[in-house]
Length: 264
Image (cartoon, rainbow, N blue to C red):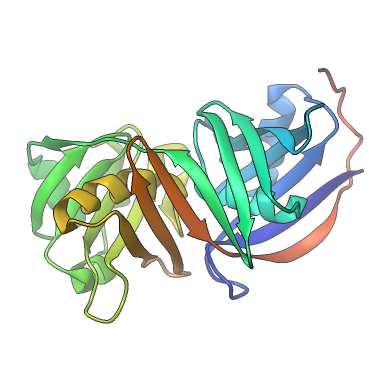
């Protein structure tokens, strides 16, 4: 049996934030087995982690129900939370080395910044969102700025139409309300098997630098206004972004299947 946890990430409240499954392995099985487990979990991401020989060092991979992805913030946060180590943990991933440091009851995730460039406004995007789009930017995600936070919250996009607009996903964002978060967003990733992601760390690797330039600050408080909702702080520094969030363990158990054939 393999240890398996389900963790709500980017929240301090159970049943909010973004749930991720975390499966701890002794060594790597075949990719097909990993994908089957992720499909069975049917969460935005399932993280698989294997300890390396070096202290506080691990290999980490992330799978949606349909594909392996290059970067996932909330499942990294969930994994660091499950491991429960003090100090800094280093994860070796498809996006390079990611460092996670426990600070009190929060975790700081040191991630690569994702640059974005101004993009021409695609009429199909406006139609799919059903909202006025002020500006657009292209990066790992297609970023669309709308009028205000209320427009983000009230959005009812055509998910099918969004599939043809960007191969990865679409971020919809606006400045936050007075007295609330600095920025508000929602994230739609239908081509990766996730119509709407509850809270997306990797999206904030792009949102952080984009909003930092516009607002003239390197430190932002962020809200992702999905149905579950979540909060995080974003610190931008050069080509890195530090995401600060909390997590809550919801389920602790074991994967009751025959242990796969493992290979190092």
